[in-house]
Image (cartoon, rainbow over all chains, first blue to last red; front, top):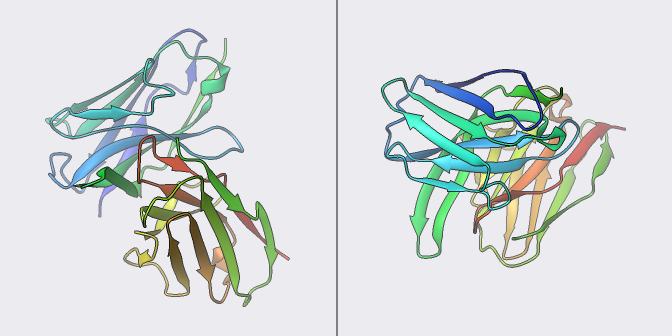
Length: 126
Length: 107
């Protein structure tokens, strides 16, 4: 059974960089069928897709966050990571990593999330 | 950006009821729609993808329908474990977006 686990600091100061890692177990991050994504959820609010990465390093990001986001992958550790720079209180959220069931057709890339980590709360505060 | 309107935001129902949740798109997305269930303090779980395909292991009382701009999630006979918040997600075009959620509560 595929499992994903987020890890990283639960508290980040304003203007600093949020860094999280997702460790995948029970499956290979190098599978050709999947991308790997990050999604966040501010307390009491809805879900926002942040971005996704393929094992080769190919990425795509939500344009609303693109200038501040970097997602990377380490296939040797079966992990992928998120960095979000210049954080503010608005970035306080539960951050989820997820396996993205991904495919490409005539209208572009498609992906939905079929396995999720349990999520980790990151609070931005001084 | 494709905007999504989920309705209702809150739905009060009883065990055994048939409930429907709507998700309307600002533009057509063919059938590139997924539905998720989220319980308090837990991660979302995939219920349905491609608008009407049930994810493996999901009970058959859940069903999805629609294409283009209008989609529906139906729970045919509400069970106690179904009280949760439900989200739709479009994956037709970037950025992928989620509806604002529908909370199904006990009446």
